[in-house]
Image (cartoon, rainbow, N blue to C red; front, side, top):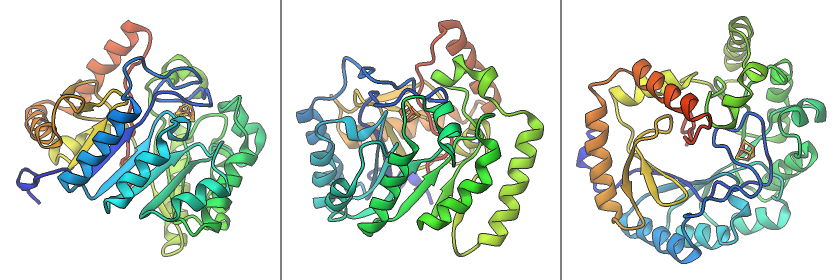
Length: 319
Ligand code: SF4
């Protein structure tokens, strides 16, 4: 498909906030309690932007963060989009997602509720999410399923939880998830500071991906295992060769060209969706002359020299 012929993106990944109720060691966005950015979109601005996405004909929006459910106007934004016929994906850590939240969302066109489960035991879970509750995250999964919502599990592999990866796949199956989403840990945000403690070795990754390939074949038709592209580099290479019809919107309304790069191509606080889409297409075209490895290297140098990563990223935009 030639995406330059499209009048609007097919997918918008919208980080509603940098704020979060957890402070995970492996967070790729440096989110934590009280980390709301000073210039995040206000309720009025967020609702206006949601209306703009509807008017522009964007078919699918992912609401994420930080933790989107800490945003007081989260449901208003979701409901405005849903009422406009926009399909939705919600990414949550599951700490404040119970039956009431699930029931409210079940009235909307939800394609996925994605819950982060980074451990099958409270010990492994808390080693990465010190102020988090595995019980609450599991409760969120059950509430989503009971409300008839499509459940997706995401797993960030680290040294502390890799031994539980296979048990988590079984748990995802038992919980009724349709997809188990993983890949390699991203060296971004808070994770940069704890990298030596967190990053699995090459051998550990080799065993992990061999296990995923074995389970993928075995679970075909029952649970989708999503682990390609494996790394930021692979995701960026794929993006450079074929730009996705996706806008990545930051909490201040800024639009990034790629999840793993800091380049901003538009500002939805002041520019229309159509304008931002045009600027994205042109920026994505300019990036094609670079190779992924040098772009990532430049990004890492910038992050390390600033000693705090400001980039937010997902290696995979699972839809
Ligand atoms: S990884 Fe997710 S839950 Fe943890 S601090 Fe970051 S945004 Fe919050």
